Length: 378
Image (cartoon, rainbow, N blue to C red; front, side, top):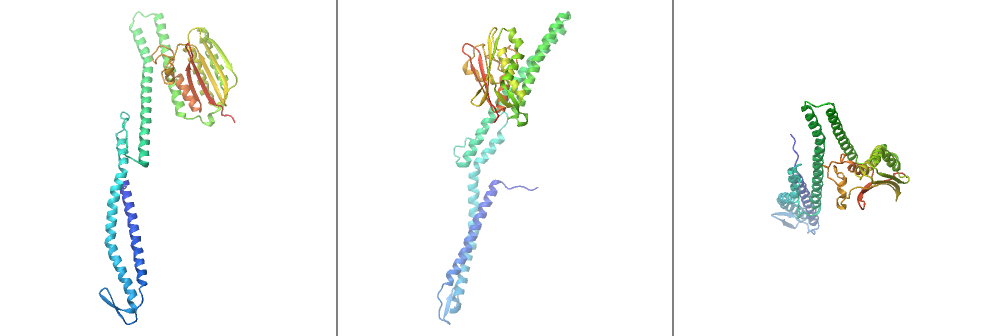
């Protein structure tokens, strides 16, 4: 089986090879230089004996003899020094590369220790400099993001499990109690059927909301082929018509204002945005309260604003309303109807369309949610 050299070995061999190449080049240049210097030796009268080293040569051959002797000395010294230089370069490269790559080994060791249950490990390489310091900082920042994502996912799964378990528990308990009562009459069975129907509807709403939220978040951005011209004024008016019966039952005063607010996006998802906002305004309102749905163009963006009366909300906790399984000012375990995913879906859909959403409490009680989307039209 073929094995690959480690990065340390590769860099060491590369550094050693470069030193060997440079040393060989210098030796060759020295050999040429010595030959050139020997060629400049002044000529002597013919017949004059000259001793070059331990050999006597005629005067007319002294230049060649000096050149050959000098080159031989250079080669002799070079062949001794060359392997010593190469070995020293290899050892030095091995040590230096090891020190340079030490932070990378820390990155590798930390990555091996990581798991879904252990994402708090960090490199924290304060002594690193340059690109390695940038790598360590980037790696730690990535771990921070991963840990945050896992925490959000863990909470989401725990909350979803709790929310799904609640209607299932209601179903099981109601059926068990009714079946265990031998005197249960038609009225009792009808009551059980109503409870089962409500619990089933709640579970269905929750599953549908979870699927829509997951699909929207997975989109990242709405594809061009899925975008169509949509007027937020029409989606808001449709949401008002759908909730008109429930609003009338609770004595809510509903008013629509504003003009056209054209955007370019997914009609079904944008209709769900308006529907969720108006449904929340009805569901979390007070009897005899009010709702106002407005649309307009603001600085080239289309705006949908839904305001309503309702319980007072702490301004510091408004941001929590966009988290899954939050229902108005009450926690997710409250008795308020709904899956607690309405504003989470709104945020995901708006983000997929490149827009933004914000919420602010209404003085005296209630909430205003503002959605702004780019028109997308030239």
